[in-house]
Length: 339
Ligand SMILES: *Cc1c(COP(=O)(O)O)cnc(C)c1O
Image 1 (cartoon, rainbow, N blue to C red):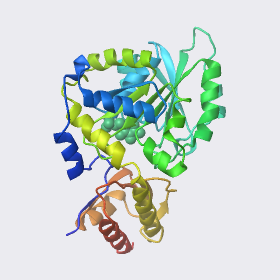
Image 2 (image 1 turned 60 degrees about the horizontal axis):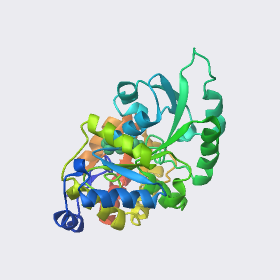
Image 3 (image 1 turned 45 degrees about the horizontal axis):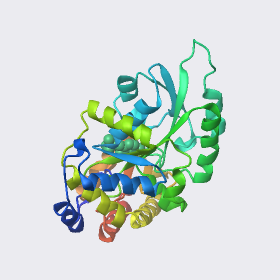
Image 4 (image 1 turned 30 degrees about the vertical axis):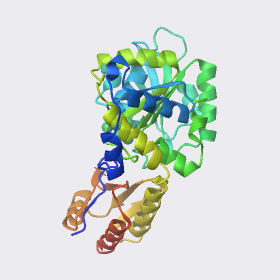
């Protein structure tokens, strides 16, 4: 039977080419700064995004949490959308690691504007926490892969600059956003103080994310990474996979987006589905007439794994381990889901 795993774009396994790059990596002790492959990855990613420096970390959660620690003081407040990964899916780390409170907004599909943010910046008054950071997510995971363009980011960055706030990007899927908008990665550096990029999502590396910022921030970030237990030794074996992914798996993200569009089209014709949310990138969110649980069981019986995000909502995520034959199989199974 054909099997398809649409639970997440984190489920990909290294390709033969990637494994080969890993086997041939030159490594050293990265806590001593001596792993040349890690150093090369950090420099390469920073240059791609127009930033000064980078730090390789075990997870996207760690890069985001380090950024929040670098850009705030205890008792500060950060502004983010209520769907934000940094708030919902990082275990309350904003409070635990940084003693910061979140101010949550309600952007359509998680997308914020300067007009939404400005009135939420606290005045200088001892009753109020000091607002010091804005966090954007691109693409928005819980928004179903919705995207900001650089043109939309520009006024937010101008506002942050004018008000003395730092601006961090949770760019776990920033390459999906770039593939959709046609913006250039290098254009991001001028707007953000920090950028997190996941290498183990759609790019298909087994482990890791990079945090990009200026040199002084990254120097402090190395201290915080050590405190969190994220200093790895011969991490070059993993960094080699990440470099391979940046060289080989960026262009192909458009294939995942095309696959997502095919599935969305099939779902929109199914009487088992009440609505399909707009699809911009590699994530498809749709609502089911029957419970999500019941539909997931029918899918599982046909070899298709997916996740529910609500009682009547299912998420499909496309990635590099989903081939056209598998997409065809899913389309067929959707056709048989009649309510
Ligand atoms: C996956 C993800 C992260 C990081 O997740 P890790 O599993 O810790 O690597 C951060 N932000 C968003 C939006 C994500 O989807």
